[in-house]
Image (tube, rainbow, N blue to C red; front, side, top):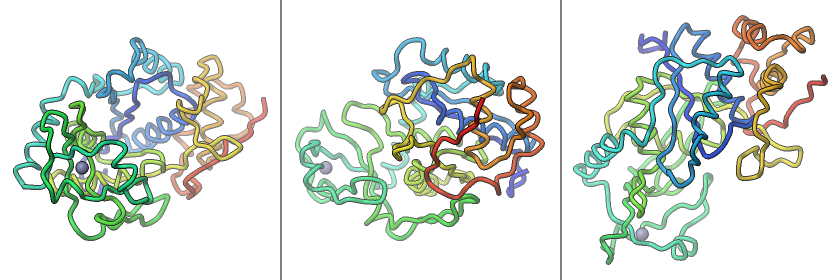
Length: 305
Ligand SMILES: [Zn+2]
């Protein structure tokens, strides 16, 4: 049970831009373990708002990869592209509060005028003051409230940002009409009744932005847990962009053991070569969030064959 008394509901929300890699499995496994250990639900969400990035068949491949690793979800996956009206309604609600404005800044202008921030460029606020020209190609930004946004993470400790100087006004709908990640996420957490979000530490900035939106929309606030992100030996985050290999379903057991090691858990050597179900059973009995290393990045551990 969560502090609010609601049954635990977690989720995994991959973008179907390609197959899952070891880093995505780590997040999926940890959130599945949190949910199942709490006797709660584990839901799936497909982040396919930017359809141009989602090749046909990638969604089905992700389902198959999860199943091959024994990570079964509850109910029907929520497909973001089927819920555009809900994102539009949330944007309208924020607009009615007076916090949304059109922004026609070009990429080049943003590159010159934005300030560096802890999670990337911080928008200058230019279009907040002066109305923009071409209505057809505007993005819509949300005016962040003043003050500090804070969250207590059981792994990473207390996290915070100053909303205006470190986050800045961010995009709710892009100029091509695609809804922003932050807006879609908060609508989805509410729609799926999510009580805890387990995600990589590369998304700490997103969690803090989402907290601001949840408060503005008067939505229930889930708990957040940020895990170390798997990195290559030279310190780069494993990602599709830098060519992380697709999960090999034939080594599902080994993949699970590597992720457990990276999460600070200590699966016994006797589990080498065991069936995925046996590994997951062990993990459910022994999983401890307190063992997860409180660092933003974690090298892929050794687990000799
Ligand atoms: Zn602008």
